[in-house]
Length: 558
Image (cartoon, rainbow, N blue to C red; front, side, top):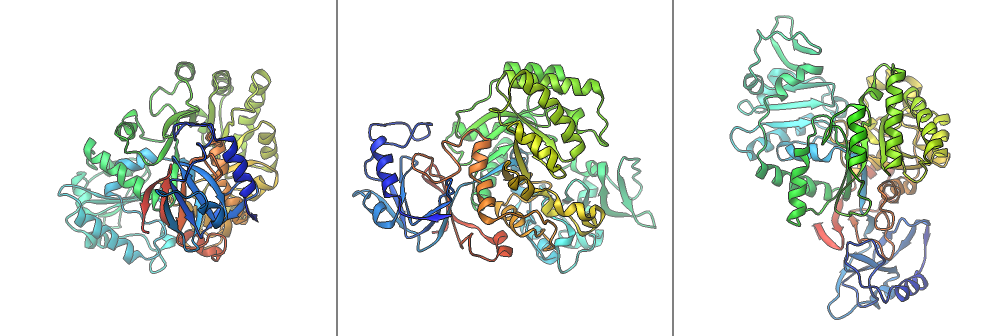
């Protein structure tokens, strides 16, 4: 990390760009060296450039960073119409980028969601349900889907009882889901779903009943579908408003860019709300998304190969663009236990060859090393036919990847997407995993071996979407319940780089996003406290008090 004057750099940059006159969202360099539109001074600006430079002030012009430097240097760029903001010593970070989020799926129901991310009181969690129930129209449901576990409730971490749930909101159906493991429904929701004590469910999964054969409200595995199938559909206008609510919530966390990777239940319709917002110039979040068998095509190898040939990755769009394929490239590659036939491995290789020939980045869901080893063997063969080093193929999750596999992936030029879903790991799961669980994912190993790696959440069903939860977890090793569950921690600087600059590289947008340098888009967040000096256990509680996207304020408390 360096803190220094950048006047020389600024002057060279401005001189070289003096003849440029480009649209603010193009990928060209910064505009001409006239007066800044906006200057922000008296701050602690973490540029996250290659030297992790820290400066006092920043100038914005036409949505891009015009210059960075000392207060005096930046004030010299002010004109009669320049807006000036005194940061009063506050810390500024580049706009945070999540490299793996199920964004469009979350946006559909965000308006009726209650998020328990970071909530440590069961009583407070129930109050949040009551508040949301009061705000919704008659006939709506309240849903709590993911990002939490019972261990985080310090006042009572026992499983919910049906009588307890009914006391919270007896007349409003609500459904609570803990990851993909189990769900809980109050009596109003069970009744709406046509479930009674007499209901028989033969599985897989369990409709849990007590010793007297009475419903407990708990549904395990596929039994959750008995209730979720009856959660009301969402009209387009409600969906559009819910999307805006989602975006605003994420801006409050400092997020300015997300990479949506499809996921279970996602359909082409899930992207329509984003398309409408884009058409109406109402999309303040940068949304990149993958082509996959959920959102547009079938899942057979032949259908995937055809789609990769018939579509083209968008490597220039900066607001809403599809450019990768995944996170599930080919469904048989997610077999559990790891038993993939040679026929399916051959089909996976054919898909990968087609992706390489057509310039597609692959983003492959990979948690276990035995799967990763076989996948890398396929990619190594593909690389001999068509080099993949410039395609930035990505291993998503990496929970149990071995050092040997990390080295093989590095040799192929691959990127490692590390996710904070294990921030939600329970004490029981840690006990079952033993010592190995403390190294999942091996972020420090990947970092020290020289891997290109970025951070994401895998939100919102299995993780919190809050990037400061992710940053706090990978720096401190603390789970959502406060237990130390990760020894593979990294420095604050490495973590922030992974949530900004590296992710821009993963998205092929490193010339425009990821750091606060002249010529790049002015995406940044002003924080309530200093990321570099707060106690590491407090990083998860940081928040943005102003989030800016392309030089425009998207959210502000200032």
